[in-house]
Image (cartoon, rainbow, N blue to C red):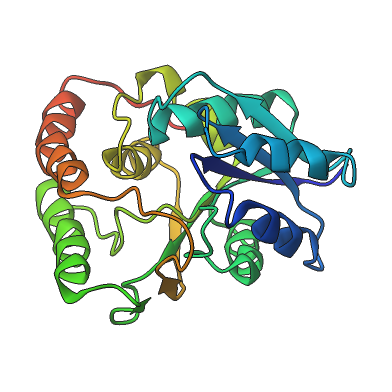
Length: 243
């Protein structure tokens, strides 16, 4: 059985879903894919199920009723991947903002000693394509702010292109991860580090989606802004056993 699975949350990704699945399956290393769909009304799950007849042992889907948040989708996927004993568990978007070719770089980082790896937009300057300047600044300074509050030197705290070794996700008590929007990405990285695991940032180029509708909003960043303070305060009263 392959050692790697890519978790892709979806909501109304019918324009992208077949292309991203085929692209991942075309890579030299063999990856499995788990789609977590939150009741997409546009037919996204139907496309995935049709593709399952072509890739019955590599493509899986978990369907949930309604939009329950990015964080809960990934937690659902993490638990599924742990139960199926994958060694390397990836987060990736469906919209090609994350280049599937970079899965290899994330996996190599973990194979070579990291416990988790981040596809980082800001480790070497600002590597973002097709974003308006207002969004670039909001994302970049969100990470500056999190570094200031936490004192931890991650350059791209809100990145959603990740690889985790299974032992990390088995250790960090997923039921204690509370945020469901993009603050989820911050909380996962922070908790991973607090448990003594090593995160390595890998430079990638982030390209904004060309098909479908972005799920990002200023409300999501407000959640992250205030959530970081809450997370930092909560950490003062919590023990983090080392993995």
